[in-house]
Structure formats: structure tokens, C-alpha cells
Image (cartoon, rainbow, N blue to C red; front, side, top):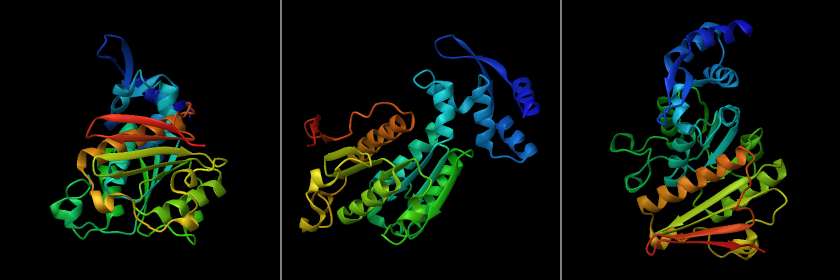
Length: 285
């Protein structure tokens, strides 16, 4: 370990932040070479560098909103994204770029033409391709340090525990209300927080549910009383800018939870409407 630290320090070079302050940097190329040389995951090299006051250059613009210890913690964190549609694809890319170290992708669908208006990972070239596989490849192209696991299957009560074990946060990017309740049930059973979002037309909503919270029933009512399985998007559609806005807010909340910052959305529902640019946070009781 001391040998690796010494090499990291020797490879680092002084650079300046935009504000003129200096920092010690290590390049993506050098972290990749060290990972290959010592046969360890690249993110482990980055974590070691961060803990020794050397910033991987790819994360320097996260500073100083995030600290080096924050960045190391993100790289050590594990997130599961359930649903790789408009919300999930954007959340996956955002969390990969900011440096969440392990991302599990869960979705049973393939891309179709109607996805092209808002699903970030979709393209004319990958229509009919499996969503989680395309999203996993995009993450690897963006950040080779990320450990990404893809599961081409729909979340259900039979597979949920296995898919979500050892995850720090579950991210709900689903379009099915009943599956959203299933995700909440297993998240509570595993003792992990769940960040839940939904969109429809110009509007979106976001909340955070910890294992001891009542959660979704405060929004939708008891599961057994729900007569529809899909949300407002069935009638209102999904607009690209609504999806990307809510996905960004959802990603911010995930990062806050991973860094043990106070969640201002726990037991609260954030409601956004981009027709009049209104944002309202409602207490759930």
C-alpha cells in the first residue's frame, strides 16, 4: 500500500482551480495504468489518491462543493437504479459523472421509438436494444472507474431482495405505482433509504423514504385501494425537460443521502410544475 501511495504522489502534478488555488492532480491515464499494474479496481486507486490529498483530475470541478473526503465516500458508495427510462437513464449518467462508485441497473425493457423524445441513453441506432446493457456501456464510456452491474429483468417480490442486497440507496425511476410499492417494501426490509420520483407532462414529484417512514401510502393511499397502476404520464406524456429536471433533483438527493447530509425531502413531497415554474414542498403526515 505504501508503494502505491508513493507512486501516486510521484505521478501527481500541481494545477490551479478556476479561483487560482492550487491542488495536486493525477490524470485518468495514470490511475488506469496503476490499476492495471497492481491489479486493483481503478476506483480504489482514486480513493487512495483522494485520501492522500491528490485529486483525480476528472473530479476536480466537483471541488469545493464536495470535499476530497466526500468524493472518496461517493466512490465507496453503492446505488441501485430501478427503471432505466427517462428518469433512470439521466440519473445513471449523472451519478456516474459525479463519481458514485458502484451502480446497479434494473430494468426488463428494450428501447422503442417512443423513447427517443426524452430517454438519454436511447438513440436511433439502439432501438430494440436492452436498456440496462446500453446504459451500462454508456456509464463505462463516461467513467471507467465505476463498477456497473446490469440486470435485464423487471423488479418483483421474488428477485428484489437479491438485486438490492448491499446497496446504500435505492433510486425509484419507475412508471408503475405497484412496482414502486414493491421497491419500497424491499427497501424497508433491507434497511435502506429510497429516493422516489415521478413525472407527467410539465409536472414532477420527488420524495425520500427511510425504512421507518410510512412513505408511499401518504402520497397514493394504501396499495390495496389503488385502482390504477400507472401515473399521470399515461395521460400527460413525458417531456424531455421535465424528465431531466426531476432526474437532476433526484440525483442531488441521492448524493446528499450518501454523504449523510440532512434530507429536506424526508416525509415531504416536492411538487414541480414547469408551466408556471412553481416548486412546492408539502409535509407528509
